[in-house]
Amino acid sequence: MINTGRKPPGWPRELPPPGTAEFEARVVPWLLDQGPPDLRTGLLRTLPLALARYLAHYTEGCLAAARKSYGQARVELGGVLTPAEVVGAQQVFEAQGARFLQLQRELVLVEAALLGSSGANYPVDNG
Image (cartoon, rainbow, N blue to C red):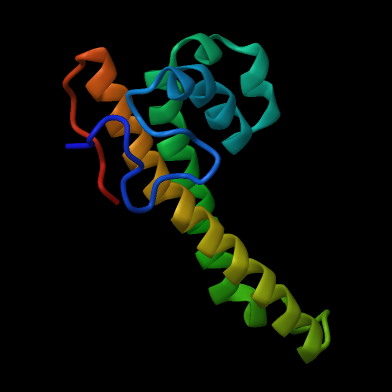
């Protein structure tokens, strides 16, 4: 359970603590910053819990893509890029994977905070 008014370990730096008025005001803009731009004009911008759930799945897919890109780089790019370019591409894929893994963990915390504030009860995927 997330304590309100305090930032739990791993909480997004950009967000105020859960259970505060500032959190309520800033959580949707933060969530929108984590996904594709077209979310800003869609229905999910008015449904924070649904937006968080979508982003959990979106991030899962992005993390899988970064991992696959890293793992397949030599096979798929080795014939057209130099070895140094392949290594450079792998470094970018690795950095993106790390970013999405951190975001995945942050989304679990944010979603739990939203569930606590909404009173909803459904399973949260812990990764």
